[in-house]
Image 1 (tube, one colour):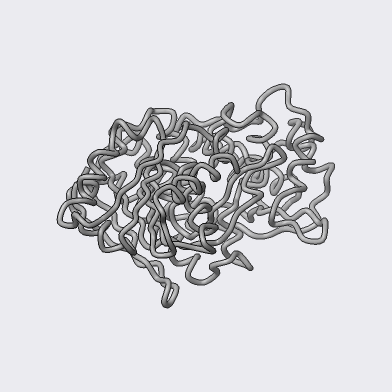
Image 2 (cartoon, rainbow, N blue to C red; image 1 turned 135 degrees about the vertical axis):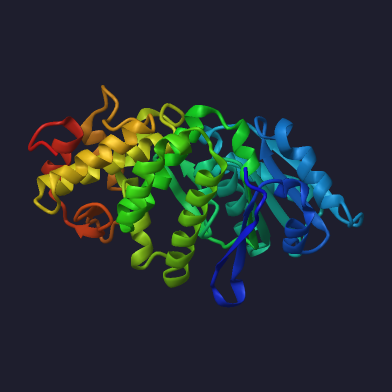
Length: 369
C-alpha cells in the first residue's frame, strides 16, 4: 500500500474526529496515542486478528508512554459472537482493569469487533472513549465511521445499540494484505454501495478499476477507501442520528440484514448479504416503475464482477424474511420503509411498499428487473 497518509475530518463540533488512512499506521503510535483518554486502555480484538496485529498495536501504544495500563480481550471471530454475552465480557474486562470514565477502548478488527467494542464503550459508566482500528475493507469504508454501535439478537441484527462516536478512526491499509479473498470481496459490496446510492461517477470509476481493486493495487484501493470515507463523513456530519439523509446509507440493508438473520449468522458474510439486498432493492424499484431495469442489470454485473452473490439463497421462506424486515429500525409506527432508488446514484426513502411486491422480488417472480 502507499505510504502517503490522508486525513479526513468527521465534523461534529466538539465531537469531531479524524479518519487517518495510510500504510504502516499500526507501527506509528502517534495518531493512536493522540486519541487515547486517560491511563487505562482495553484493546478488544478477536482470535484471527490478534496473532497478526495485536503485538504491533500494543507496542506502538506503549512506545513513548510507559504509564499506560494496557489490557487485552480476545474474543471469538464472527457475527455469531456479536452478542450481549460478548459485550458482558468487555464489561468484565473493564471492571477487572479498574477502568473509570477516563478509560479508552481500542477496537482492533472488522465490523463485528468495532460494533461490539463501540457498544461496550457507549454503555460503560454511561460512555467512555473508544478508537476504531479497522482491519477489514468493509469496516474501513463503512462500519468504523459514524458512531453506529450495536450487538445482535436472535431476532435480528443490531437491535440493541447506541450512537457513540469514536475519538479517531485509524485505517492501516497494509492490513488488507492478510484479508482473505472472500472477506475482501464482501467489503467491496459496501464500496459499490456508495456509488449506487449517491455517486454515479464513482460507480463508473469502480466499473473501470474493478480488476485493479481485486488485485489489491495500492493506489486504487486507497483511492476507493478515501472516497467512501469522505462521502460517509459528509453524510454523518449532516445527519448524525439518521433522521434523514443518513438512512440512504442503508441501501440494500433492510433486505440484507433479514437475509443474514434468516440464513443463520455466518452463512452469509455481511457484505454478501448487502450485495443481494442492493439487487433486491434495485429490482423492486424497477418492478414499481421507479427506476430503469438496465440500472439493475448494471449493478448486478458489477457485483458479480467482484465475485458477490446477487440472488437470495435457495430454501429461504420469503414470508420469514419479510417478517424480519418488519423489525428494521427505519420502520415507523409499524410501516415498512425501504431505501430504493431512481437509478444509479439516486437512492431515496420509500414508505408503505406493497408486501406482495417485496415477496415477488424475494421469490424471483413478477416483472424482470
